[in-house]
Length: 124
Image 1: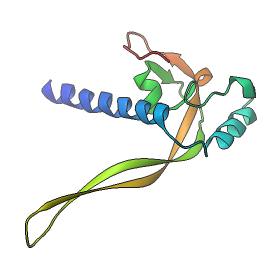
Image 2 (image 1 turned 60 degrees about the vertical axis):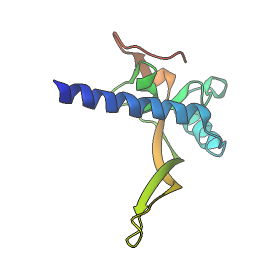
Image 3 (image 1 turned 120 degrees about the vertical axis):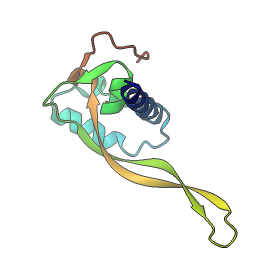
Image 4 (image 1 turned 30 degrees about the vertical axis):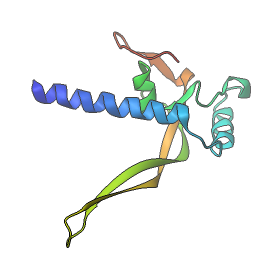
């Protein structure tokens, strides 16, 4: 039972992190690809609002929504901040370095999601 709670905690943390990155990302470089990709799926351009109604799977979960089975998202490239800790062999000093790592992720429009029953969620 403790293991399940621990795993659920990690999942919730991952979802919250994904939502935070989606809402505070500084890059606008994916916007044209997002708009073009959803327009090709029949969603009007005025209804495509990245950072408002277009998020990753994990971000939608954090918002209390579930992407419907079989839905296909639009692939975009994002950069995720990571920390790497290394230990100096001679001095045993631990050094930390932050770097950006590119990741390809799929984003989904709100019209591809449903509300999850009983889910606690943040406001969109």
